[in-house]
Image (cartoon, rainbow, N blue to C red; front, side):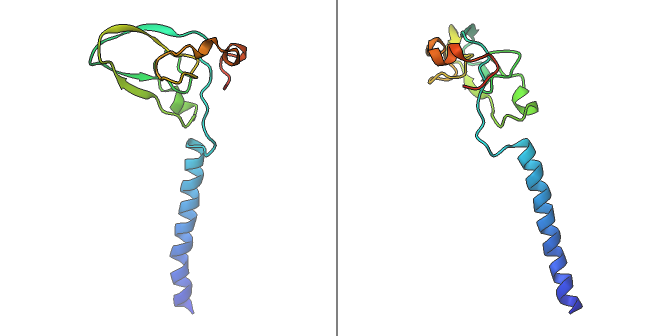
Amino acid sequence: MGGAGALLRPAALKLNQRRDITSWLARWFPQTPAKSVVALKTPIRVELVAGKTYRWCVCGHSKKQPFCDGSHFFKRTGLSPLKFKAKETRVVALCTCKATQKPPYCDGTHRSERVQKAEVGSPL
């Protein structure tokens, strides 16, 4: 009987370890779908340099809009920046309302009533 109890203990220990890991993961990576927040209600014009890789802020919390500053990690948004490489050197309008259908580029969605009525810092 002592042998059977000894066999159950490691399984119970593994189960507790899984619960600890799961609770840690849940804090850092929430299960609810993440939503971007409106950073600004107008796009930002920037000059992209051909061949250079950029990280566009998806979450809307970055203080270096339209680019990522790592805020998504510290605010535990569950979102990651959009990494893209410029094909040519040119000035483009990058979205800051985070509602564009052509990320990272502005498609004019910021002009919609939905975006204009939203508060900066709130999800759409």
